[in-house]
Amino acid sequence: MTATGSSHSGHIANESGTHGDHSAHQAGAVPGGLQISQDGYTLDLADTILEPGTTLLRFRILGPDGNPVTDYTPIHDRELHLIVARRELTGFWHVHPERDRDGTWSVRLDLPEAGAYRVFTDISPRGLGHTITLGADLAVSGLYEPRPTPQPARLFTVDGYEIKLAGDLVAGEGRNLTMTVSRDGQPVTDLQPYLAAYGHLVVLRAGDLAYIHVHPDGAPGDGVTEPGPDISFHAMVPGPGTYRLFLDFKHDDTVRTAAFTLLLKR
Image 1: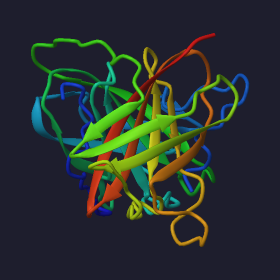
Image 2: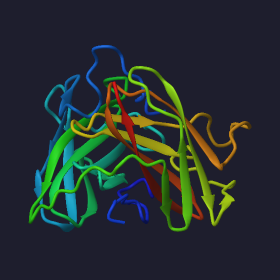
Image 3: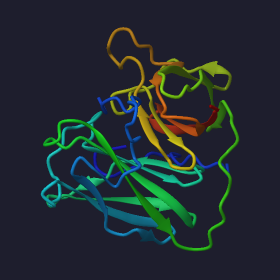
């Protein structure tokens, strides 16, 4: 993935086959991604209905003065991280759009199926001084055939890689999660840095799509963190529900996504 508007190979996790601490959740706080406006900033989609297939998504971030924002503090090597997910959490895209001088962001997406989607933007406007996640609904036209959220699972395979998840989620309490990557039965010990980390974890709650973006413990080149096979995170979720966990990792110059489902009861 480059700094301007590309996505990585195989990055749609489809079941038919520093950000600031996004894991923190204070009592009474609204989880990230549930609001189209926050702290005076608004996610403004140019189109809320798109055609299926390869399409252009365009949007702006409007500031408290109503004008498009053009000054951002980078978050893990990017001014903006864009996440798109199907409402059923059976599809997931993590891409990085281009921004023009006027503050309009654009990126080409391959959204092959009709349905309901959610768009999330992780940003840190320089005038705000901290990171926020804005969210907005997006529809892809056509015959919509909803599928259920995948059943709980702690193992995912993609392109010959096997990723295992260890650890549990607890509402309102930070917990350690570890993803272990292997290929052809052998541990992968030479993961490559991707956006200044060995992995990126996005957690979404089925139903309302409460959003959490977590970065792993340690960092490449810190003299302590090993490049696999384990990628460890400290995550906190806002409450009970079914959660989908999407892990991005890079190996052999390709970024791949693993997807898991965890059920958190009261």
